[in-house]
Image (tube, rainbow, N blue to C red; front, top):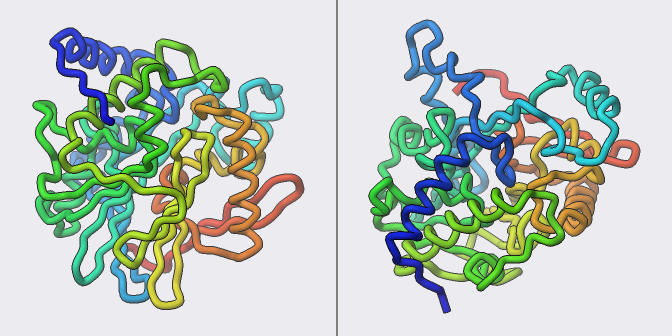
Length: 342
């Protein structure tokens, strides 16, 4: 049964935790944006051009649209990425891939799946929780011709703030008022339990508490719209849900299929191509179960490489489409290229 939190004290705690999130350097898959790239919003006096980011393509009978919710900047790489790994190895891995060695900037790529009957969001971004560098989803949906009230369903891969934060406005009203919201039963049970277990994570207690409070508050608020799924379930005759635990207990991969075509949405299985795709054992501090996340990451990437599956990633570079192939003890991310812009 879903637990409710309705006291004024709890609401004040949520507000304080959101403020604190902007002061910390890493939050379980999100870093507080330090606005290093905020100048992009003002560049050449044309913020609308930067914010209006979407990419449309087809998968069988489905129309798919990638929408940008912005980005998340880690201005300090370790220990968020590759905790416990010698820093010279981490720097070399980044430099070998022609990437900055002092920061990791993560995309927030959100997938829309449109069938004849449904308009489905896979996750919904940060909302207002983490500043102006993110929370772009509503504006970019509008640019792509989609109104919030036209979203019929939202599938949450897991309950971290950069995936469910966009569900609520500041006054706790629903951003997508007509959408049914789908979440793993295991994920719900973890966050709504009496004491979520972070003993196998490398994140500190205060950040774990902040993320837990936002998850609980959001799940409680959306309860009238909430539906639960289990490992292996199929939704809408075009989405198959597969558990890949570790990042969170109910972390879910979303297989989108139509006719003989398939796209595998790997959610937060990986965050950096140079670090956790190429070196899946190096790991990520924000994983709730650090070792289990490594096991899931290696298993899924191996299957995707062997089967040459088209992949969509929430945090790899825009628009998050590509493939992986085996390379040494890890994998290579091969970004899909496009001949012309949208």
